[in-house]
Image (cartoon, rainbow, N blue to C red):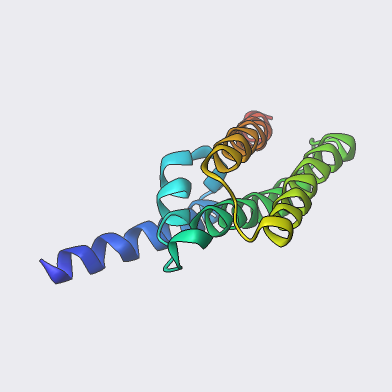
Length: 130
């Protein structure tokens, strides 16, 4: 049983990274992205912060890939980059002020990051069709 858990953890860890190599962004697989982001081994009061920062990290990596696509406008990628940076800055600010990220704040940022991930995935899918 211990090995099955290890294998599952490893496959969840690897899959978001291997998706980028296949031309599929981790943003196109939100369940895997969220599952990995939840794997953080941190104190309970830091889980919300850790989860959101892990999601932001995935989105930044996906954005870097999308910026290399020929038919994606710089204006679109800059807008998404600004939204990602805004989420990052606000998360850090809230954690500095209060010491943690509340469940409501985590849910709110999670929804915002879902929208950004969806936009990145659409840009990726559109690029493949060109």
